[in-house]
Length: 297
Image (cartoon, rainbow, N blue to C red):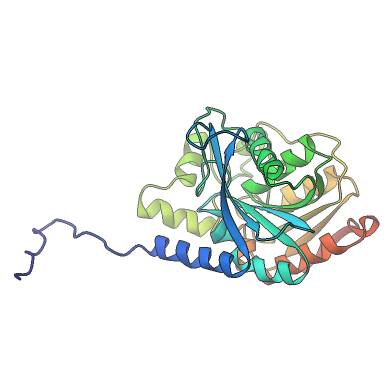
């Protein structure tokens, strides 16, 4: 059989290998080996999947969870990419990880127009109800921290404790004008969050491995009283350390701030062992000891 002709000059040959797809399969296998299984949950619950307005893709333990820990990812690919290194240490420490794709990421989607963090929070809570998990601890990275903090405010009876990792929930509109956030406006933020050219990807990587969310109008200024762990990369150039201290002050003695040295906004990927160690210690402590001021790693 004759070989096919080579591509015409100036044309691009078809790419038959996808690094991203290969990595996705690799991470999915790690989840399966850790004893988790994927589910696609139609919402509202009980609807035929073809009629559901929203579908949440979520990894759940193969057996009923006894110590559930909800892990919410940040901007980027699916949840498997960000949480794969944490599965075995958390399971070995006695936790049952539950790992959803937030809506518009990975396998989760919706036909509804709502794009708010409150919608994300309500959707993930509905998915947790659908799998029969009424109470749980929660860890949120970056944008996942925005969603997790909103969940804790909306559903205090469900969320036992919260760990926020480089989540700038105290970012305010005035911070743009003062240069605290690394973009000057929403348009520039959109270009950063959804890169379309190699140079835009390079800029994003230079800032962080996890894409930051668009700014929120103001801080979540509720009197939310839950033991809260705040983890921050000391060299975070997306959400600077000032936001970590601002959030710690706002929670007024009911939080613990852990600063990870030699790490940026992607602290969960750069220093997974240190981050996981602090998560495990926090969720295993008695409630009275769960928040006791600042710490430094």
